[in-house]
Image (cartoon, rainbow, N blue to C red; front, side, top):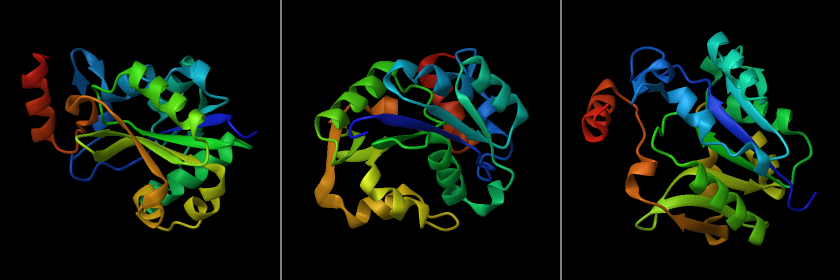
Length: 195
């Protein structure tokens, strides 16, 4: 089990700041959720679980041959998505958590992060730019109990802050870590990428 790795694609949020289902919004003609799933090198993972409240995302995850996990209670916060994802992964040595609103995240970077974690499987590994941590992040199984104990909108950041000494970072270009939380952020990203 030591170096087996699972991946949780977190796609369940209500996107309150965005105003509607931002995962359907497009950049360069492809939706945010399609870009997120395309960024996952499935061969690197024992299981990939996409956790979502949206039927269209469940269907898309199945097209990728990922495990489609319905979140019936997105209002319970990110901690519930984490719990559902970990349950779906089963007995893995580590879990990568990938958000669905980083449309410029590259598959190669996700693969490199998996390789970094496998070289130090007792550590927390994350992508970063300029030494500033971003997503995705990989947690070793020894920290799963802490992740499962999270409540409401407390996410992995809470666990990482308790274990800063165990964090290793992989530098990537800044645009890969750019997330789309608001319509204005989407407009800016589209302008930058000539979408």
